Amino acid sequence: MFENLTDRLTQTPKRLRGQGRLTEENIQETLREVRMALLEADVALPVVREFIERVRTRAVGQDVLTSLTPGQVLVKIVHDELVAIMGEANDELNLRMQPPAVILMAGLQGSGKTTSTAKLARWLKERQKKSVLVASCDIYRPAAIDQLQTLAREVGAEFFPSSPDQDPVTIAREAVEQARKRVIDVVIIDTAGRLHIDNEMMDEIKRVHAALNPIETLFVVDSMTGQDAANTAKAFNDALPLTGVILTKTDGDARGGAALSIRTLIGKPIKFLGVGEKTAALEPFHPDRVASRMLGMGDVLSLVEEAERKVDRAKVEKLAGKLKTGQRFDLEDFRDQLQQMMGMGGLSGLMDKLPGMGDIPKGVRSQVNDRELVRMVAIINSMTPGERNHPDVIKGSRRRRIALGSGTEVQDVNRLLKQFMQMQKMMKQMSKGGMAKMLRGLKGRMPFPMP
Image 1 (cartoon, rainbow, N blue to C red):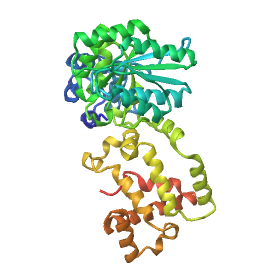
Image 2 (spheres, one colour; image 1 turned 90 degrees about the horizontal axis):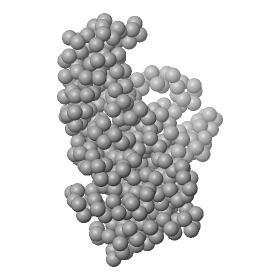
Image 3 (spheres, rainbow, N blue to C red; image 1 turned 90 degrees about the vertical axis):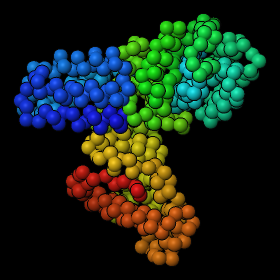
Image 4 (cartoon, rainbow, N blue to C red; image 1 turned 120 degrees about the vertical axis):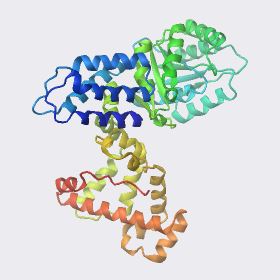
């Protein structure tokens, strides 16, 4: 996410080397680069103009402290202004009411409303410990109701059945009534979308909204449509009292223009980011963390939170105990580490949150392919327990058998074993208290999977 913007923004402050003070003259070229970066990211022009002017006003005349370079001062100003245009903090869902709290999902067809409904249901159940009922008022799109029922089953949410011959308002009312009787905390109503905004669509969703008076009305929009996403959000906001936005498909959006435009143009906060196809791929939107990612500074807080939720502590403690007693790190342990990494969004997901990723060449970053993690696990699974515990025995004929069993080439098996040996060496250093030495050795290098 935001790769193109990050590439440009991390390079521009380097033009200010050797300056003792930020002036109109020495930041002019840098601000021009920032402006081009934002326009290339498909940020709406009025937003770009306002942003550049605010940065210029704050930057001109700033003295450079002895501990900072001019580039660092400008990065701090740009970071603060990015946070300002996206919203100062995460706007949480407002569920403070007598249950059931009703959330209405709105948006165009194809924006990801139905999937986002399921993702939000899962997020509410797992993070907020709420009971959730979902219902579909989409009586037009073939199989929309069946899709939501399938997703509800996957995420463990209650599903209210409906049919294409019913009125959307009736469906919505009956779903809320059932939730009230069953003392369910939250009801999420998935509404119909269209390929474009039309009067019929707006009239229908207005009727549903009036019948329910939802506590939250969330607009679901595809981030890859750039500033068109902001324009569509503005049209919906004129018709409905939106309370927030869910920005979907951000994992495929290298520009980030929608995230930077929406808050300014419609005055409503982005509340969540859809960061993948799986039902767990929904993140609360934290403007300060996203601004840090855009500037190549990573997002360590989100990384720590994700690790706390998804890392198997029992396996971590088992490995720590094993290393502490001097036992060798083996391929079983290596497979566990790969699977834990996959559970946290893979290498691409981790890279997005690690500081300093903007300094790694784009060509190197593009080689990161999470499918390789799956292939590496398949290779290890193709080994016998004895081979996983004693990798030294894996010679020529065994390597050919393992490659055949995992659907890979012998070269792939060789590469994995080489990476394993490097990891084993690192773990040995850690067990001897050589963490600081190991980190110094890793400085500037990234252990990527097979290209």
